[in-house]
Image (cartoon, rainbow, N blue to C red; front, side):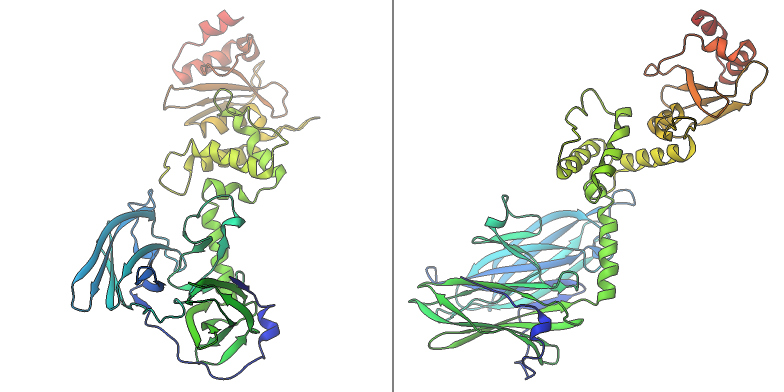
Amino acid sequence: MVRLMTAGFAAALAVVQTQAAARQAADRQVDDGLIVRAVRFYRADQKQTRVKAFAQIPLSAIAPVNDSVRSGAYTVSVKVADSTGLTLLHQNWVNRVSAGAGSRDQYAVEIVDFAVAPGRYDLVVDVKDSISGRSLSASVPVTALSDTARASDLLISPEIRTMADTAGGPRPGEFRAGNNLIIAAAEVTLTPLRPKLFYLMEAYANAEDAGTLTATVADSAGAKVLQTASVPITVAAGGSIVKGQLDLSGLPAGQFTMTAELKLKDRTVRRSGTFTMEPLGESLARDSARKAVAREGDDGYFAEMTNEQLEQAKAPLGYIAEGRELSAWDKKLSLAAKRQFLTNFWAARDPSPGTLRNERRESFYAAIDYANRTYREGGRKAVPGWKADRGRIYARNGKPDELYQKQQEGRAPPYQVWRYASGKGLYYIFADRTGFGAFTLIFSNDIREPNLPSWGTILGGPAVQDISQWLGIDLMTTAAQSQ
């Protein structure tokens, strides 16, 4: 196994300027955004060709269930037929994804794995959106490799990592090939922000063989823009995996072909794959949009927060937490642990778990922001708005349905009454006993809130009578009993 890297595209840009061979495109077909690519590997012990095919489905073609549920579903139908038209494989399955993204770099990839004997075949993939009924179809011819093949097709990817690089298995969008975890892609698109191209192929030999491996990159006109130095390799009896990566920093926008040239004792084998380098401006805009979408989810919302910001996000959760739900939180937790804690806390409260957004989290932190702007209390020790009594009630219940307020009249201080019409019909009476805008909760029918025993005395009889008439209940008796 050989790991090949370049020192960087800029250093090798002027190495070669000769013409390259014609680009290979037989392994890739596109129809209305559906892209299908097939990569062939030979299995000598079975005298069969193992085919790994990728169907890349644009999410813009998948309609969401509705505006509030941004997920959709589609049916995939895969058929493999031989040269006589006989169907050898026919499979159907349904998958669900976040739908309607509208961006070409957001897609789902379905992986098809099958084996064929020597011969020529057609792979046909049909995709049907479950909501709109829209259908996409693409096909690709597949010719089985023979027992004289010295290498598989070239598999290129935005990322290949080894099992040693991670404690877990494949992540979403990855598949395993031996000890390698590979991001599945029918069409590889690099960006100036992520300019590395990874590749893998199998080399076959009946007996141990030695040779060299060289990688080149050519533009759409066939002109070479990069060639690496030849690296010695050894192919074990039966075969070996050859893989590597190219750092293509500085490569201009456009379409390119990467070719791996394997020189062995008795022959030279070349395998190619095509990819696209995205323009910098488009890449930056797309990356910004991708991050914005990611931030809509609970994990993305907390992903870039500092330790101080995570502590601030946790601080008001006591208003809505249940039991000892916050007992596991410790200021000494790692950033990753704090982010996971908050993600789990809000995931348990998500009213629409099938969507990316968590409306409950959004409304809560929006209420905290509003409370900080509106209910901050001054004085010797300034109190953040969310910690003030009105801020706490606002964060927990949102904006009141009705508000009744009066300035100071006689012995009664300025006061406000908040009423919530839905649910239990809660109401809250606040009084500014300082005269500086610090409204304290003095009475409520919310059993979670304590009442001041002398609340009726604080307001005085006329104010209590006034509030009673507005609420439509008798507070005079309650006020008298509390004195």
